[in-house]
Image (cartoon, rainbow, N blue to C red; front, top):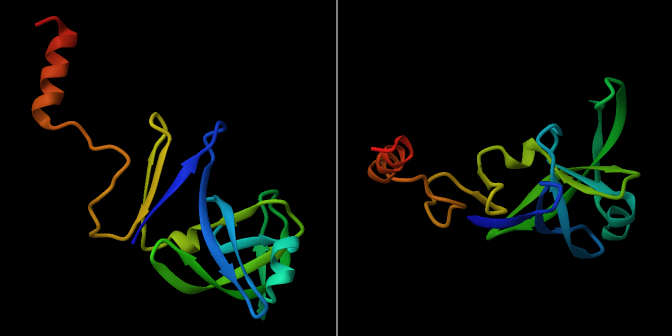
Length: 148
């Protein structure tokens, strides 16, 4: 699987995905938050119409250090060519988040200079945001900078 996203003017990483429940499915854009250990966090206004199934509850440590008991739901997600079931936190927020739990096992390639974002499975080679310079071109660049 190879999935491309976008980098906004604040250098935030965004990815489009399809999220579905018992009643409907919707394509959303979610912010990648590597500080969130869960899989997916959805705002109430997105989650309720989908009809997500309750999976349980778990305590979560919030950014301010406090502990919050949150209900967990399951959703069917599609991103790139991959479809799977994900655990979803539903909160009173405006932004959907993709956490480290969903990214686990994937390679996240970010090129802030070119504003390119790629998520890929290990072993998938193309496309990548930028190829590192070959050893020859790197050394010739260094010689030019040194004036030799």
